[in-house]
Image (cartoon, rainbow, N blue to C red):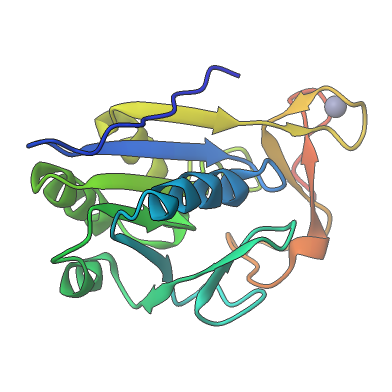
Length: 190
Ligand code: ZN
């Protein structure tokens, strides 16, 4: 995996980093790793996630491997602006649960000189791009696509396989109902 690891502080400019991938690909771990390094460097770090993501804990971002960091729960992307006046680095997890307003907010934060790191699911269980991730990938300076390992065949996997039949786009709090699959092994349950 090509990986960009920004070390510099934003200096009269900000930027957007996007970490995109399927479930179980380590997106949140990668987000936490970058934010933790910024904290160690005594940078002012603020972390946000949408209120819909209640799968493990309230007020923490938590990866499947149970690394966590305290985060601020927001109803919508605009609310992020209320907390970031002094922030240098802004982390946003589960970006696919925000609406398209998130694109404008991330651009504004980066234009204001902040480093913005956004993690999210790039496709839904059908393999359809999950807004606003495609648009965020387009406006970001740096993109990381995290791959999982196909549970079925061991190939690199970028699809989230739903194991139960449901036409809901999102099943919150149901990590057990999913697994990572490669292109060849992924199918839409019906
Ligand atoms: Zn496979």
